[in-house]
Image (cartoon, rainbow, N blue to C red):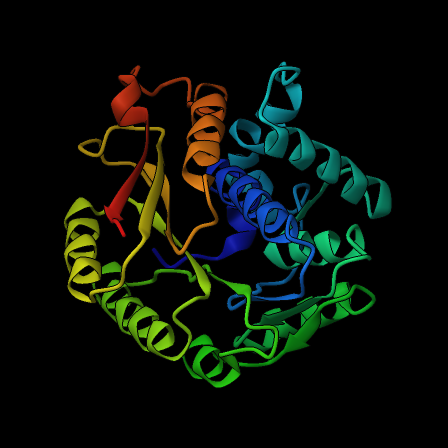
Length: 291
């Protein structure tokens, strides 16, 4: 994909990913016990939707901007919280900001002071790390210039015993990247079997995604949940047909919450030129591997 995120910040995939992240963090916090959370691909932390890159693609128009204009009075709680948090970010920074995943994690820590949450973010690319460290240095999240493939196995299992690892790579070569990520998840799960792992992936190359499913099944890891939202059918050649998240060890009833979320936001985020998809193809929340 050769994915530079500044071009895609606030698009439909970001919206789905960050609302699901909000839901995961909320459910992990319900017990009130300490936990650890890591964003393994932190990016630059904050993005401007008025930047040349964002204006060139205009992807946020049918992403976060469409959701902000929609009637969300009956939206699932995580959707409403996402909208409130976007407004908080814009009041804090400016009206054109779109926060990346490390901000969502750090904001959750800030708004849950009674829970001991240790948050960290890795970023391997030097320029992105510098931006991340500069933009979020005042927030309660540790920023590290580190590679996910080296860093994740090194920091788990955390002392808190509970936690979430978010893996959101750029997918420059899908066939190669999927295989390496399967190995990373298998290695990490062997070290910390009770951790929650959330891997974002693009729905673009259906052959690569199907092979990814098969390889994940072969790992023997239990409780693998697939959460997918499609904007275009898989047989239409566009930049990005849909967005997916594989979650290992999701919290209890997260699958039901995720289904409600994706079914609510998909019609809002659907591109105007996209054909109407049947409900079973527009969103899918299913167990790739059960108990």
